[in-house]
Amino acid sequence: MEKFFRFIENGLDIVVTTKSCGNMLYQRGGRDVWKNYLDFSKEAIIPLDKIVRVVLKNGSEFIKVNNSHGGEGVYPEKQNLQGFDGLITTEKNLYLGITTADCYPVIIHDKRNSFLGLAHCGWRGIVEGLEVKILKELIKMGSSLDNIQIIYGPGICGNCYVQHDQYLQDIFINKYNYPEEIIKPQGKFYSVDIKKASQHNLIKAGFRGSFIDLKICNFCDERLFSVRREGKDTGRMLNLVCMI
Image: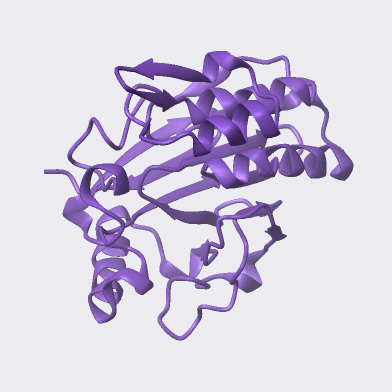
């Protein structure tokens, strides 16, 4: 089994590790994770000091990073970027990184101005508008909506994110007034399409382009980690993107 997927998309290098690469989150694997990073770096030909990974909080805060942050979140002794779920850079050949196991990595890219953002979008980040915050920051930096492309990496699809109680339905529909179409009945239960909810955020914020979707569901594809399929103690995969 391949250790990672790689996609070259309109000036971006997008890399997603699989279970064969091992767990990539220190909080879930301890010392084995460092070996996994070393092996991945060698096979993917990506220097570890050209990766910046944030330690997630499942919120909506982001940080701007540059080459001086290289190796953060990767080397065991460099776990300083804590409490962030998004990153922005203007540096080429610097890989932005997040770990996931059902949440979506959402890439927001302005090729003309060399602006790049990466958002960790689970339901909490989505209702707090993380992807919109990053989009608005890129516009504040000088981008325009016409120059932006948005890419959705692997995440749990709308058929597989099944909820057994009313909690998320109340959150999305009653509290945050999302369209009812993001909720789909599943027998006695229902499923939530968090990707569609995220896209709703971006359209509401003014994005009119086409979303690029890698169309990979963590739950359906057993090559990938999935909390919903395997439980919260499962591993995490690394999602990387850089401008080339």
